[in-house]
Length: 254
Image (cartoon, rainbow, N blue to C red; front, side, top):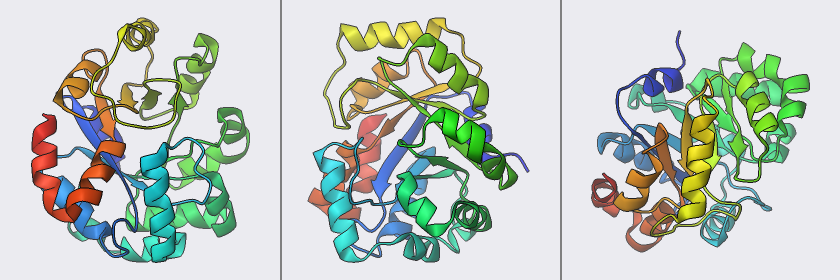
């Protein structure tokens, strides 16, 4: 069966992907958030597996992670919450998390569980591409999982081409060298970076993350790429309005 991520990437439109932290704002909000996001037209969802030391995340996502862990979220519980998700949701679901909790669970067992419940891909910011290629790619692919790598403005063309060669979904294009966080607009430096990546003619489409918060940044990011990911701005929305404000938030993006 074709991976849902690849099917989504073939659509003739700019994709909107939303990130949220599992177990936030409340422990049992996970399924409702996913269902509400799909209902309101989101194309893809990143489910954050909270971790005590999230290096790539800005303060908003770090705080949500801390609260989710206090609420009692664990890898095992997330899998339990998601066991019937494919009865109500059909868009791609990606788990974004750090490698440590996955190793503790057991890499093969983690991948098998993802396949069983219908997870399409993983984003693991602290798993280097060489390490993945040498030790884990076979296992991920055995369970039908697409692994998504992050690139930044500092990533060399050579490394980007290597990432492109071992990827089979999309490349997560970090819009700036900093941690995650919402911005109201992008400057020239980001635009030059977007143009530079476009000129590499990679085989995998790119989706931009970090700094997308509104219609303007979404439109800017998708001029040269396939889509955009919103994380911090959505977490802030959940903090302020809980699950009730999802519809108006998504409508405000596009």
